Image (cartoon, rainbow, N blue to C red; front, side):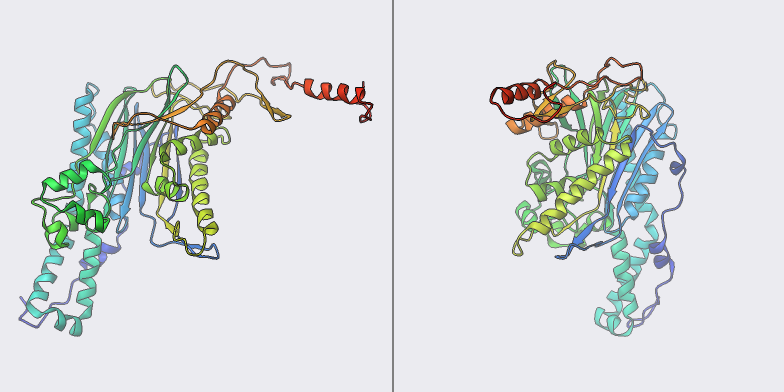
Length: 491
């Protein structure tokens, strides 16, 4: 034990640990689910000349895997580093897929399995940083013995090491996972990464259903939970975050959990750990022909869209973009990346087009989007459209649309969807209907996307169908008025 005023030089253990990359895991070798795709974009800080630059390393981590007839998807949005997100993304599949599913589970037992997985993953993460916690305690004891000023003057590297360790153990992550077992969907989440399901009912009405809960300071239920712990929610609202994060639940982040009493005065008021890893769960939802696709998205996606457009229904707008991109790409990864790229462009353009005095869209966070397709057709039959119970290839093709004189003529006249609705089960809100322009847009969009079996000619192609009646009527009217018509048009 060093004497007062004399400090031991910190060992290399903590610095080595801080620089370690996540090791290879057996889950990295699991088969990737072929019915899913992922889109990414790193965080960006904008400049007036339009040049972007990254504010920090990319902190999101995902998995989308298949193990026999079980499908498992996860999205982890890290903060204060990527360590917690990478740890959770490697450990979570092991907690679910390494023999835990016996084949006779019901909804209740699967939810309990997911709940335990969150708890076990966090416990494992904290155990993985035990050495850092021990060294932090040792350094803090030495600082108390020698004094902060003397240490900063004589051995500033001690202070730097302590700051590095504090930064490492304050890292945490959101988690949104989706599990498909026996054609049923289960979702669990902490933090504000979202899981959104897009369905179509028998009336061709599109339902956009958020299956996750946003655990942040805008959630009244979470603020009530914090209030019951003795915290001042008005101070939390004014501060805009809880400790060093905006989420009220997460995996990891020791500083707002085990060390919450030493973090700040707001957290110190809590009677117990205010930030928890208890997941919100939903399921099992039967996957049938009405299910179109499932989205797992980091907050960077929907928040960027909200900031740039002011939309009050980001989930709905994103699902409409996904449907649109399904008509343009032959792979699900192409769909996911195109949606991400579109929102990134909208956000960046808003920054460039805003007045100098307007401080909007100056930067955005990391963005990740996982798309799990169920029954939304792609232009190519090479990628199947399926439910998890029947992985049958889709032979549907897009309808032929011809534009003439501002009229859209389709090869099928039967009724199409007229409106979208959005249903958020987390907040128990009523379905939201879009305005008339959105209804018309939705009708036109689904007219172009719905696939049908059309008669083919001897070359295996759809016979062209264009109504030229408006053209011929115009020619006849020109003749009656004695006007000259182009050569060849009067035959």
